Length: 380
Figure 1 (cartoon, helix red, strand yellow):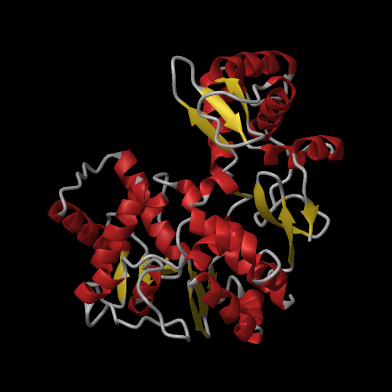
Figure 2 (figure 1 turned 135 degrees about the vertical axis):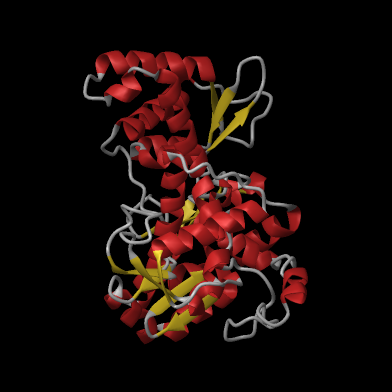
């Protein structure tokens, strides 16, 4: 891997562990100066160790309140973290579960021992395994509470701080100015500081499919327009990408592709992706070009009812669609809506009938003619 490819990999996979990502870790060590320069521009933090690399990012702005931290599995992950702090280096899964249950009682999170509770708790432990904080030395996670048959675990107390988000002012080398272990109250207080304008805009460009002009405040829009050929172009080059200025905003794209940093491409296999393309085509062909709640010029809207009708017809025509979706059109509509919204390309205006507003950028997965008619711009 070359330096830009390594940088893009870290944006997609901010946790790299020895034994699983050896080649990637070696590449990060080889191009560490290049990666750190990029990370400084984004005001993120990079932890590079012999057996682990951790890019400590901030959550994408487009997710809003739809963050992973709200999930029950993530709550149990953090309860396990609280438990690990009091457990020895090597322990049984049953001991970790018991300590996590005790921690849940302290914060009044109910645990009934039901199959669903055990599933969520297991997911929380698996999230720690994925991040290298917990390692299985012997056994499996099939049994969680039996002290004799539960798995033997190795707990990496030294990696607990790597779970913390991108908060607090940093030294030039990416380490915290305030040590959260020795000064936790001061670290929390200073961690609330907002990133500078340049970093906020660059983070959007790196994380989002397209940065819409209408989503930026005046200082952010001014900085982006001013720095398109400057700092923005430098960051794009560091990622091996191009700056695409569109009528509705700005995007970073891979050379010769219109898929953004995350590599989404359409049409793709699967019911939800195919249905999403059908909804996109419906909006481009018959959607309203203006109306209340329009996020910006070029956005087109369709009613939630027309989407349901379209998907119902599609379920009758496309017999290969998954049966679970063909039997539940509302569920399929929710999946399509979530997919476009997660990409930052759909907004919903509530009313007597909800309207789905799709960004002009959805045409980037259409024919070149569609893209030309939808968005005027140039690639720099």
